[in-house]
Length: 172
Ligand SMILES: CC(C)(COP(=O)(O)OP(=O)(O)OC[C@H]1O[C@@H](n2cnc3c(N)ncnc32)[C@H](O)[C@@H]1OP(=O)(O)O)[C@@H](O)C(=O)NCCC(=O)NCCS
Image (cartoon, rainbow, N blue to C red; front, top):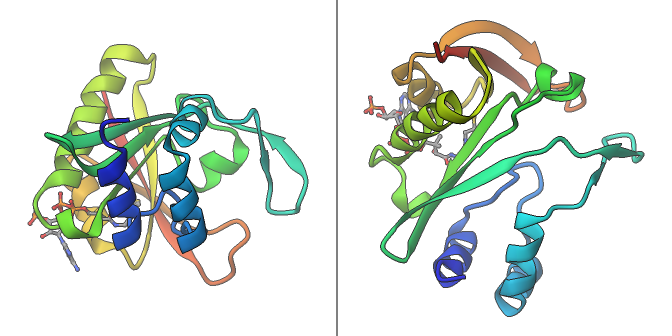
């Protein structure tokens, strides 16, 4: 809760948890008004998600960690310990976002390095996979600086024209 005022500020400047469905101003207002509800929802997300074809699917477990300095929220990074077919095809184990005003200062590189240590210590994974849009050279650089090796290039499963690069990062 201590970070929620800064988190809301980050949302207002363009930080989003899902670039394909960014939070709208009314949603951000609601998150600000009902911060406790929002934090509870993050800690205990619903068991199901609406899939691209409109059907309900089981949500893959995900742990989201916040990267902060003092009471300032800088960004977030998530890990999904087990991938289903859709996340294996696009998405992968790890995803991250830095708030726009804090970019270009090494935070994503540091978050990913810390997350790889955390995964190595807590999960039985020998390597992780990550997907990056081809038009995101900053993220490719972050992954390559953290030991990422190119796996292949893939089309987004349901968004036409969106192509990405999949990487592997070895943990052991
Ligand atoms: C991608 C993102 C996470 C990078 O965060 P960041 O904190 O700015 O990243 P860092 O400062 O740790 O490192 C960025 C690296 O990319 C480099 N870079 C930045 N823009 C670049 C460009 N257009 N071309 C090539 N390299 C670029 C930087 O120079 C830096 O490399 P360096 O340390 O060798 O100088 C951030 O822009 C973001 O949150 N974007 C929106 C969400 C997103 O794309 N998430 C990743 C999904 S895979």
